[in-house]
Length: 163
Image (cartoon, rainbow, N blue to C red; front, side):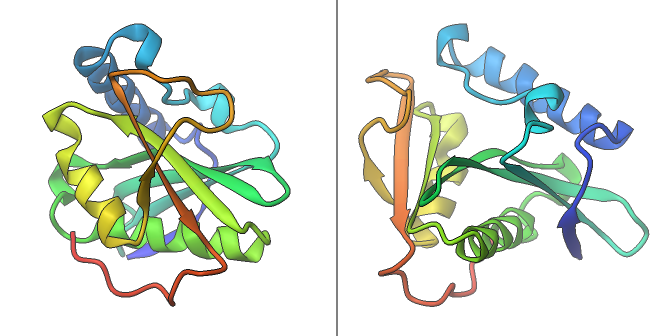
């Protein structure tokens, strides 16, 4: 698997991101959907990564957005259905946290849903060392949102993550 920066406007990436947005809107009320579309993922301050297998098949994506010089936010994590359970999300998350370190962030946060649909994401973030927190940046209390954060300066080296 290769994980590299990529243009989110690539056709297969667009299809995966559109699937992601459809699922988010099917699972959460519109006002609680904070996933970014392709246009917003192309803005300055966002690093967008794609995971591909050796033949170029898209396995998953993720992004990190700069909130300020010391704080990043994980955005648009999504694994292609055929690649789920194979460690793609964990690998993308490790690479995003490595990018955060390279950018000098002392903290990385994220917002995800509260429904059972998001259970695998909750487990992934917890295994990676994230802890539950309250709203950050422009987020507010929302019964459909769950917030996580990790302090980079106190984090142990990234341990291998399964799934």
